[in-house]
Length: 405
Image (cartoon, rainbow, N blue to C red; front, side):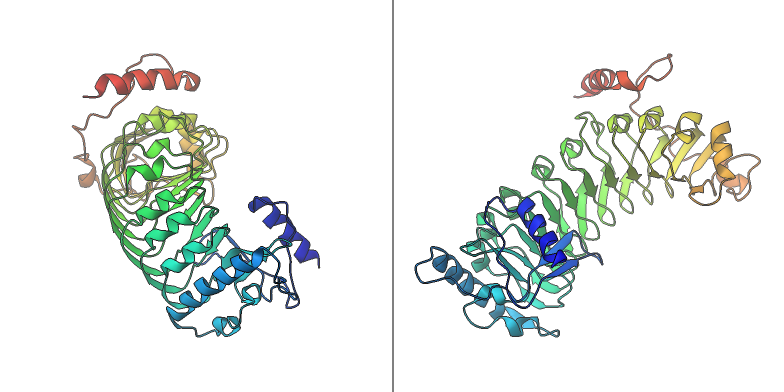
């Protein structure tokens, strides 16, 4: 019963109601999806022992839910684990993967993570207006997200990762009013990503391992999200020069394995709570901005497999929280004393295949004669004074504005 009360507490936090959770005989299961998919999944299988009485206002809600879930069941063509064998009869709260809440029960969430179901989503699901979580990672759903999902007014978490969805970015997700967690990773979505995504009040954005392409939206740094993962796509062009100017609370951003070019913008230093910054496996050039040294909370800094050059400064290598720093496969030619200390530590620090004199495992000398991007002019604050992180914002805003067309 201890697990039940834990689940009840979780739902009390998620669902905007003072109603208690109503759980029945077949028990409580908690599933935390991880493989290829996202957030914590919770389901109550076995549901409610005593269905609502005919006079209960929830009768119509559960009847509507029954119609919607049966329509969805009809669109599922393969169920190797037999999940849907429990989807029989009008007591939808007893369906495996469906959970209900309230003394007058309603469907509050669906978790079918790792169910290996094949099929598609149906428009009828939009009548489940009380649902707060929809977790479907690691299945074989295809097609796209129905436009009617904009009516899911209580939905906070949508995880459809590790499926076979395709087509353009599902714009309907921008109109789900209370959505805070969006996980589309490991699918086959393609085309550009709309700017409005980064204006929406999301806390987590996972778009990695798709086929998205085009330039990164200029308002990327405006997002209130704490985590943004755009890795393993086909994004091109530069990281927006205004990145960081909005001074958001971003903690993790992953842009690795795209086709990005240009410089790392100086605004990166404004993300004072940044813990993970990974831009590896791109074609970024120029010098590393000094403002990286303002990332006082940074734990993982991965710049490997680019074409960066110049000197790796003491200010970067002396960051107190840094546990993993990789600049391998670049063209850095200078090495500070602090960075030299890191190079002798075991694991977590990789300076190989650069142009560092007197160091082992560096590029052959002929490769270091011509530095890529030698003529590239990066946007930098002109200042002869030492870097003062607290003064960054005003200086950057002036500099970015003066270079805008």
